[in-house]
Length: 525
Image (cartoon, helix red, strand yellow):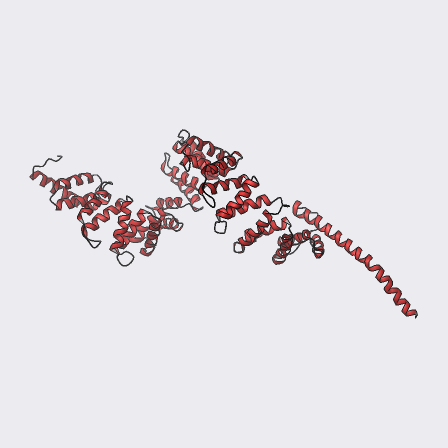
């Protein structure tokens, strides 16, 4: 019986102490939570170095079992960013996700940032998840970052940041940002939607009003949009004085783009007196801030203006080209034209592969002809000519027509050649006019048409006797026994005859003078 009572007394005392022990344990857990939150917040927000980071993480990890979302956030943050803990991406994301779904704005922000950047790894960028967390953040009334989140969603959808643009969603978020949150950058984006009619009916007056409001609140992009609109007459009448005013204000804020446009206005005397020195000064300021168009413009100034300096021109062209400026690439190629055609072609090709029409057009003749330093590549010439034609470039149509006419890249296609050269000629391409005239005379398109051949040759000849078009006409009229017309075209050609056609020119001129003299027709002596 004595043993029985001893055990009874033991279990009685134990049952009495359990609530006390539990209460003590809960108090200890709460204390751990409070210390975790206090220390982790100080480490993250204030970057304090006198706090034991490893100890703080261990404390937070123990406290995480108590279902406190703020503790989850700190555990996830410290693991994701290797603060007091070994980097553990999966666990960090798991804890942050629990905290984010529980409404912790800091966790939502951290997750949005991670998925927007992929943690610094481009392949890990996940815009769907980034947008999910930005949307959570933007609608989180407890977050001070919701204004910024709404603006970022506005910009992502508007400009298609790693996604296809979605103007309907852009309008929703830009309106929230610009109108509801009074974010003037968001208002600038909203103006862009209205002025282009993207995701909303086009409304130029409202767009200009929003631009004005944002510009008055020192949004550089709005100042530039107003300046460009007034300088080129985009949706509003041209007003160089207003353009100069707004572009000057953008330039005052050291905007590289604003400085570039201000340099242009001084270069051409728009809204101010023409001033080459100020133009160069502002181009230089913009170029030093990395504006590639200003770097190219500065190279052009050093190459062509007084006090020519090719070395400085090349320096600025190369800086611009390094940023993908295709005008600069073609300019570098031009510098090499008479020195190193292999290097010339390298730069022309670089420009072409970046989508430059000028680069493609410079490449095509060399790709078709080849040289000692340049390998023929008619297939690439055909590719460029097709791309240019698809973009509506009349010179591209001309070259594609010539490729089909002469079979440079395979079989000939006279019908396609005629259609392409005709389309190019309608756009005013004198080379196309010349080749149409020649082809219609010779029957190269599968039929002959002298009347239209003369018309096209005359159009080419009236453009400065392109490629000796005047000689072609003189030869034609001489064949028709019309030496008066032959003489007129030869006279037009006398200052631009090419060396290879000099003998033919002299022969026809002697013949025309002889025939006109025999017939006692008046002609200049």
